[in-house]
Length: 438
Ligand SMILES: Cc1ncc(COP(=O)(O)O)c(C=O)c1O
Image (tube, rainbow, N blue to C red):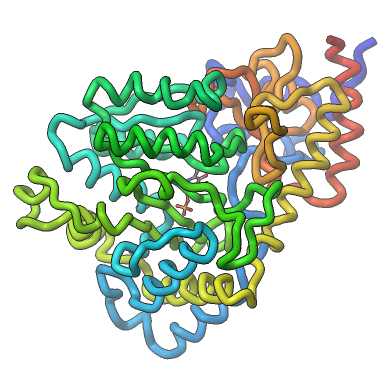
């Protein structure tokens, strides 16, 4: 027998109609968020919001204090150096050594207004480096805004869903694209937004070898730095380290963000770390267009200069202080963000108990880590049906299709879950299961 849903269905259906959403599977984060806010107001029933991917923790104190001090010392008055604050560059280089176990000199560590700007400037530089190579390859699922960046700059992209190509299959699949000769860069995030799969060192070795063989640049997006909570990645200068392609090729750019690891999203700060070889490499097309400059300097003195003339000066002081404290072991950033893993574990338990399954469930033979995101599906429901149906139960999440995935399911973000909501979710999913027998 059908039970009453926590939110009257008509409120949701009317809202979806009023927002003129034809296909709920393609609803954007903002649309889902607006419908949830509207339904919450209309019904008075609290929503469990899982659609946004923004940090739910306080900003790292060490960063806030350093930034305030820098402002009080008068730093706001002066333009930042276009190459970045020397202290931040130095600390970024140390951080990379301490937590990734690789060497990148301070020159190649360049502050950016968030990884978003880092990818934008990287896409520009990579896509102009060789006229034959005009297309970016995404190992999807991924962060949709990066594709929007390419749309804005008019650069082509190709994509495939990694779901069916893990382990030995990955290298062969990527090679089918690189062999065509038109790919300038390969992009993925690790851990992955939204699926939370983590490519392992063997898979990364394959990517690195191909990058060298086909002379392609790998853009490794480390927005969720060290958040593979299965591994003890938080002791500076000691293995295990954050997995990286940097061990297997010189053609790489690492994108390190302050947003999630340090909960510093609002200040728009990150560091783009370009390998020493790539930084000083001279590409004919770039040299012709930009007064003979090598790759790294085109990135900073042309792309970043044109985009924003550098990165907020005081935020660079914050980032320098956070990286320094992490390297020196006085601030355990991993411990603070570990709460996301704990939330994921509890939420997955509730969903799975009530008939749901994890869509991207494994890294080869190991269950995926618990972290910032995970993916869920429900038998015999498409992602659009599931996202729509869950709204009746006051649960909002986005469909995987919007992230370049080919799988039916939703992305769940753990960042906004409050302690009292586990009980709410449990009650609501019990009704969901009763109303949707498998
Ligand atoms: C995979 C990925 N890359 C990049 C970003 C953006 O990072 P930033 O805030 O540093 O621009 C995000 C944010 O959600 C992300 O999920």
